[in-house]
Length: 418
Image (tube, rainbow, N blue to C red; front, side):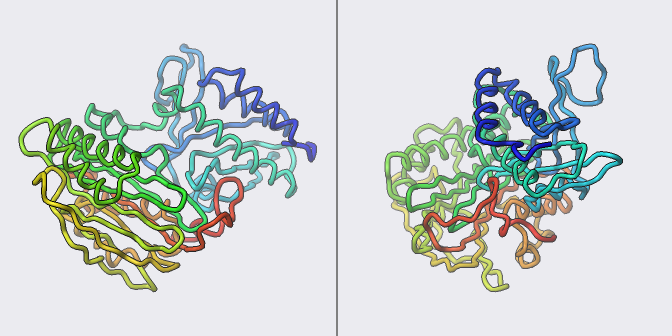
């Protein structure tokens, strides 16, 4: 093994291998190149399962070779559930972990970009890696994150591999409404969101978008279930995004979503509730519109309280009545939790979010949404009667270009315990 494991010329070789390979072969081309430079006995990429509770090893095998995983043609998806072991810990802590196994050293490096845990790079090395080699492996894993992001646009392979349960048509529509990445880190904030779908889709969505000095947030809940609910959600989210991308104000976005649902809803008197927010990244001032939606929670200084907001009508009700906005001043250390009623009502009420949130302060939002999702399934599952959706925003202040990140994640914000 040399200390030039991933030099600039090696990176050029990786990028060349990516461009020469088909999108479905790009990751294998990268891992093969990485393994060759490191003299690895084997190297593998595991993609994060959509549930957030497992990793999936994608393997290309001849059709006559038997395996226990899901198969699609010559591709096999082998699910590895989280069990608290080194694979899970590498992702949770966002650290490269080295473990001696017999005469080899297993190295596990998180594949992450802006806090989004895309998967895990695993290698078996013949000798213990020194700090320089560990750092180069970390950089290689970060490079792999960009390769996955770039190539998953052109193939269903990664999406198929991440789905451990089949999707209905309504679930497919709903999935397309969600942002590509469920987690985002910047210098002034970290956020993560999650959706636990009901057996018959309930039309919940979340969304976010970064402008130069602003962060846009939304969480919505279309009434009903199934395809009609998913289509109502499509109108609502489409109206919000279209207005936002035209530079509309927050109130204009709310009105656009309202008009989109009224003018185009698929049947009956369907509507959607929602919370819209626009956060000034320099000041921490959040402008927010509540369209008939459950109030968010604010965790500050060890105390958790619901945020009192003026409640407007839902989207799809009363075409001409104007919307009103409230303001909430965030201070560094605040945690804001947006959620849908599936996190609060019926069986989910037993979760008691307000008392649970103070116990999760040391967890990254990426872990908070997973823990709370697990909690909802425990008290109201395993099959939920309604979608359960939440978005967690941690506010640090200090907007600019001073983010401290190594290989795609800020290790100081990673989870330390549960």
